Image (cartoon, rainbow, N blue to C red; front, side, top):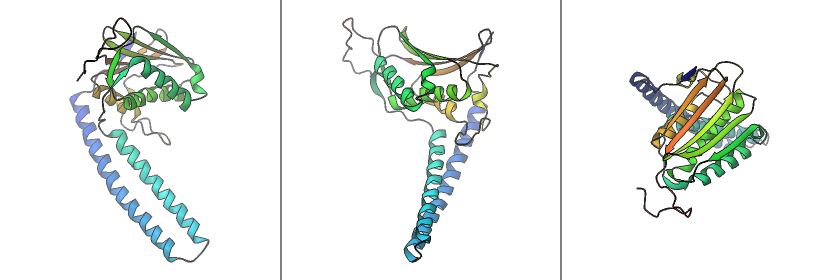
Amino acid sequence: MTELAPAATESETIQWENFVKFVRQLSHDLRNQLNAAELQAALIGELTRDPELKPELLRLRELVSKLGTTLQTLTVAVAPPRPTLLSYATRDLVADLQQTITRDFPEASKRVQWGLSGDDAMLNIDPGLVSWAVRELFDNAFRHGKGEITAEARSDDGQFIFELREPKNEAVNPDAWRELLGQVQHGHYGFGLRRARAIVAAHGGELTSEWHADSSTLISRLIIRCVLPPRTDGSYNSTNPN
């Protein structure tokens, strides 16, 4: 039996939009206060002549700055993605993804079996955002499982399809990504998969998750439509896809 995560309902969308407004306003208010605290610490550092106090004030300013960065990161995580579209070959995207995963997860990436099939094609994407979305899938797979992961990319019927297969020891709810603040850990606030889906949707694509009970496998599938097919000689038409 296969369980597929359904699309968000209108009510869920409204709840999320209200939550985003709350996070933005709270982050803005807190960052203003943190900026004031950092300026105050800088002023005290200039006024004091205590040689032991100066390095402690510098450390305090660094901690305050890190808090501000965390809040900014949180704001970006819930904000609607705004892709800057570029023409990008599927083979280049897959090569970039392999390099990113190997670099960011040097040990865990050894468990990944990569596969590439189908003709090369051209995409109209923001490669940085799409790479972020795929990296988030791998990050979740590495943190929540230890088995061999299969990553397959292919161009089929005018679509670029990237599929990640994760073996699991127990059943997984593919709809769990919707639960606000349901997967909170140190340094992780549970917004990654939601943002990944928003990124793919901003490209006119879709990101789905399916639980296959017969094989105890979670399958995540990213689909983005190709815009330019390759010529028979392997080059691409020069027509602007826009």
